[in-house]
Image (cartoon, rainbow, N blue to C red; front, side, top):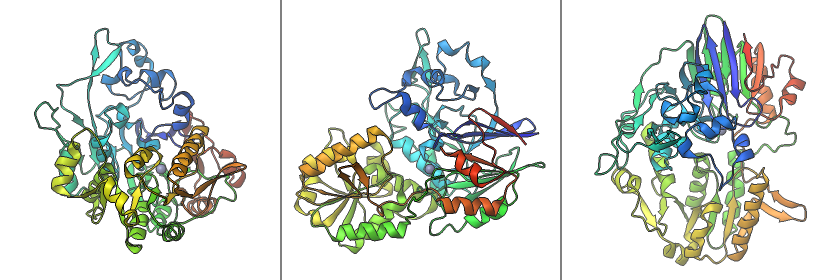
Length: 509
Ligand SMILES: [Zn+2]
C-alpha cells in the first residue's frame, strides 16, 4: 500500500519534507528548512547552536522526530531519545531545487541517503558549500564530520577526518566538467587542510518508484518537478514553479501527471487575489527605465540565486554602457553552473574587490583564478566613474558604500516584498543609507501608511492563481494536496477533491 506523509511544509511557505512510500520502501521529496518556524524562535543574534548538532532543532520541533539524521550530529543527551524516533529508510531525497526552504535541512541527513537533483542544482549546492560558513545547514554537498567532546554534549569538528562527499544522481547525466568540480574542494590537499574525497555521482538509482523529472521555470535555475509511478499509484510533485514566459517543459510534466492519483502542488500565492502578474520582460522594461533615468551609480538588489534576474541586469548594463559588478561568491556560483550546463555566464562581468584583511579565499585564488579568470574592480574606480557600473549589492553590502562614497545615483530593489516586521526595519535602515548618500530608491518607498513596494521591479518565482488553476485543471488528479502554502482554504473553495494534510499526517492511497 502506498502512502504520503508530510513531515513539514504542509501549512507554511517552505520547509517541504514529504515522504512517499510504497510497499515499505520510500523516498523524500525535498528536505527543506521551515523559515517561519525558525524565525519564531531565532534571530540574527540568537541561533541554533552548531556544536549541539540536531539537539536544538529536535527540542524545538524544527525538524521531525524520525531516524534519518547523521550519527555524528547526535549529542550524548539525545542517545536515549533517538531510538524512539520512527525509523525511516528513505532510499533517496528527490530535490526540486536549491532554495534553502527545500534543501536547507539536507545537511542533517545521513550521507548514505543519495540525492537526486538536476545537474544545475548539484552545482549550486556544491558552490554554496565551498564558499559558505562551515555550519551544518551548509553541509549538503559534503560534510564536515563532528566528534563528541568530553561528556559528549558538545560536538566538535573532526579536524583529521576528510570531508565526506554525498552521493548525487542527476537524471539528465553529469558533464565531465561538473564531475571534476564535484571531486575537488578549493584549498583541500594543501598543508594543514582536511582532505576531500569528492562527491559520489551515480547514473541511476534503483528506487521503489519509476521516477521522471521535468524542468520547470522558477526563480532559480535547475528547478525540477517529479512524477513517481508504482504499479498502484502515480504521484506528481510540482516543487516550486511558475508558468512564466518560456515554460517549455511544463506541458510535458502536465501530460505525464495527467489523471495522477495525487498532485502535490505548491500554493505560495494561493488566495492572493489582485496579486500582479509581473513577468521577467516587464521587470526588464521597468528596471531599464530606472537605469536610463539615472546619473551616477546604480545599485541593483536581487536574490543572489536569482540568476535570471542577473541576466536581466547584465543585459540592461550592456545596453546602457555600463558593466555589471558582482561579488566573488556570485561569480563562483556562475562558474559552478557553467560546469553543469556549459553556458558561460561570467564573461564581461566584474567582481567587486572589497577591502578585507584576508588574502583572497581559496575559491577565488585557486578555482576562479585558474578556471575562470575574472576581472576585479575596486572602490576608487567606481567612485571615479560611477556611470559605468551597475553594482549587485543588497542592504548587507551598504558598508562598502563608505569606501566607494558615491554621490547620488539609484538603488533598484528587485526582490520580493518584506513580510516580517524585522525585514521592514531593515528597509528603514536601508533608506537611511540611501538618504545619507542621496541615492534614489526604486521599487519601494515610504508613505504616510508605511513601506510600499512599487510594481514592476520584481516577478515572483511562483505560479499565480490563474497558473495554479490551469495546471490543476489540466492534470485533474484524483486527490489534490496543497503544500508550501498558508492558504488551504483557497484550494478547498475551488476544487472538490482537495485532501488537506497537516504536518505529520499520513495519507494512505
Ligand atoms: Zn523556491
